[in-house]
Length: 157
Image 1 (cartoon, one colour):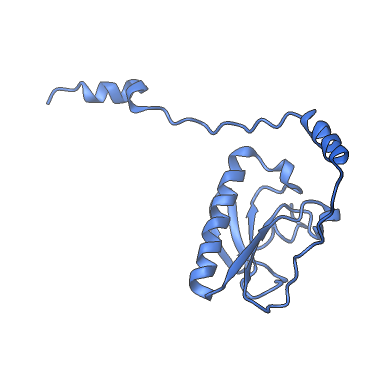
Image 2 (image 1 turned 60 degrees about the horizontal axis):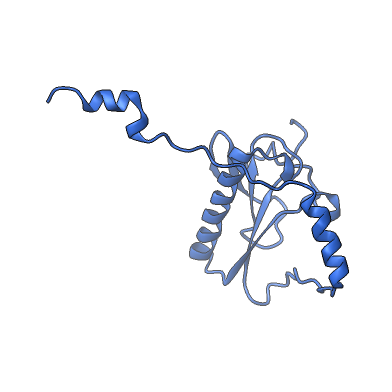
C-alpha cells in the first residue's frame, strides 16, 4: 500500500526477506525501538497469514536477543498494538520490541482488576463459543516417504 508508512519503510532496515522485515522505529519510544513487520499490508493481527506469524515472532526473538547483546539492555518489551483502542497509530500490523533499562521513563504498567467468578465464567463461556484451534504447521515430508529420495538410495554403488 503506497500511503502506508510501514509498507514504505526503506530506511534503517535491519533484516528483510520476501515476506517480513525488521526496521528501527521511525518514531521510537527509546533508542533501539524496533518494528517487525509483514511486508504484505495487513492492518491487524487477525489478518496476518498463519504461515507468516511464526516467522514474525521468530524474527522478534532474534531482534530481542540482538538488543540484549549489542545495547547491553536489562530487558525488552515485546508487544502488539492491535487496533486503535489498543494504541495503534499506523494501520499496519507490527510487533514492537523496546529495549529497556531501569529508569528509562517508559511505563507500561496497568492496574489489575478483580473480577467476580460470575464475570470470569461469562467471559470464558463467550470465548469458548468461538473455536480457537491453531493451524498445524506443514509437516516436512520424511525422506523415507519421498519417492525421489528412495530412488536415489537404490542407485548402484
